[in-house]
Length: 151
Image 1: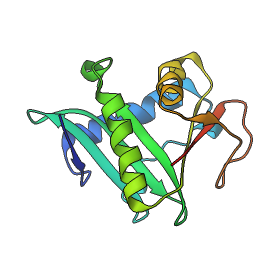
Image 2: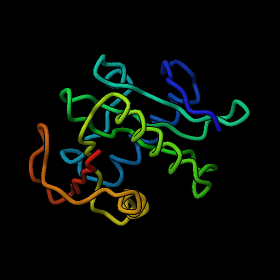
Image 3: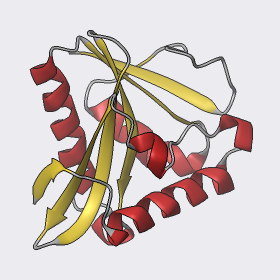
């Protein structure tokens, strides 16, 4: 598996992000969906990575910089075929390593509270994330689960 910066131009990555957004809106009330669309992921404060094996897309992850010390995990997603293969774990480790290299001291995330998000929350817990309150511009929301990792 090879993880690298992605320019968000490939049809496969666009399709994966569209699927991600569709699932978020199907799972959570619209006011509780904090997933970013394609244009928002192209912002200069976001670093976007994709994982591929033999040219085939396995998944993606983004890191949003909030300050010199604080980053946020965004748009973590694997393809259906790559689920339960370790691709999500590899993407998460890549994002954590990237954040450490950039000098961030905190990596936080927001995910859903619904059962759909159970596998993601388990992955984050297994990798040292702890529950926290809302951060950055987030507000308390019964559909949002906030987590953080000290780097």
